[in-house]
Length: 303
Image 1 (cartoon, one colour):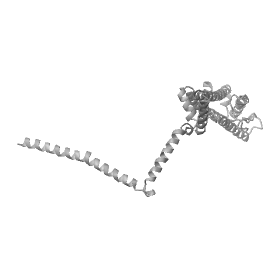
Image 2: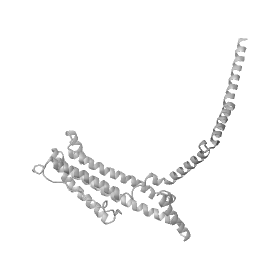
Image 3: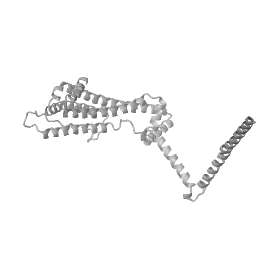
Image 4: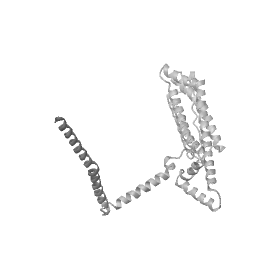
């Protein structure tokens, strides 16, 4: 990767960066973005795997959404009726869920990392062709991508067929078929600007397919949304806010009640009384005593 990166930087220093390097940069950024998303989910599930038993039981009950809360509650009551151990069930279920998600995410991470390493390796091998004229660099890029994209396609397809990644069975999302790029030589009459433009469009179509495939296949294994994780505090907060709003509305003038106005008036009188008794009077007394003392001191000095 370092040698390939040197090829990247040297091309930029020597002059205008060829279009092939801009496309390679987009491919790398797309892959790194997917890897970053996977890494965030991995960190979340690793924290659950390393948590205490009480944390795991809390996760099973309260951090998977209302439906999972009801299911876990029903299973817990069933275990209690049958003299079983609810804690053992919750801990076992938590371990199974977390281990599956870690396996899926780690497997996908390794495959994408291998794809990225393959891209760098092929770029390193063909760095001379990539730094030539624009058409020749594009031709070299097409050859490289026709090597790395099929390998990634086979890797993900084999994983799907072997059910290694617990992929979904949506026909539209479970099939990953990359478009093959033209390998016409730049010296051939068949090479044209339109052909190069169409091939570049196919590259970005392949990236879109990869992004959609990863998103669809990992949708059930990624880190839950904050709304799912914190649904219980959010629900309690919403209920408390609603109850407080209804209580205030009931005692307001909108409902024909003078309670709110009376409370406001009482509060004003209490604040005014507190200010007069504990602030204004002591300050006036202090000022009076200070002026009296100063007067006697001055009078004594004059005498």
